[in-house]
Image 1 (cartoon, rainbow, N blue to C red):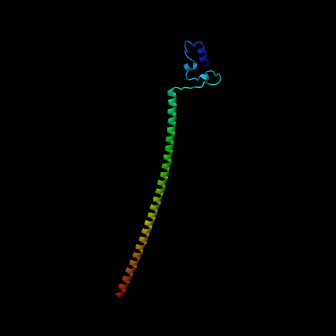
Image 2: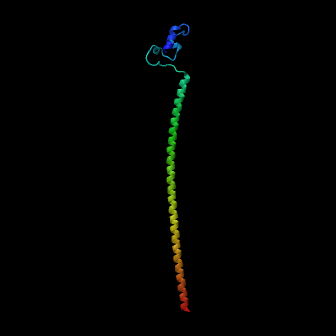
Image 3: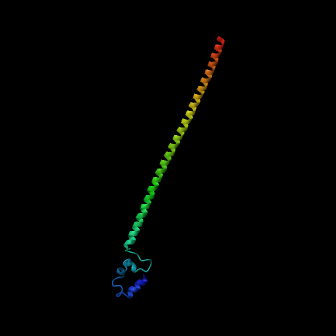
Length: 134
């Protein structure tokens, strides 16, 4: 900055037809006289500003998308847990039905065996009765 001020002082009429702030518009006029610290910028080029704005919008959009995806993920986890619970209930019902069917078959088998034993006894009694009758 000091080099620019020195050049401005030497070649004021040849190179710099106006004031220092007019020729270097990104520097503020009151900051040109300060000797400590950085110069403050008053006008940035439009493409830099638009790039920064687009970048900020992109970041905000990405954060919103991440938030939406997290909400969808939580929702999907809840639905998956519901499905697992439902499958567990169905499995328990099927097991209960299998046990009930096995119990029913066991009861039918015991009834059939009882009936068979009764028939065998009845046949023996009838045979004895025939033998006694003869």
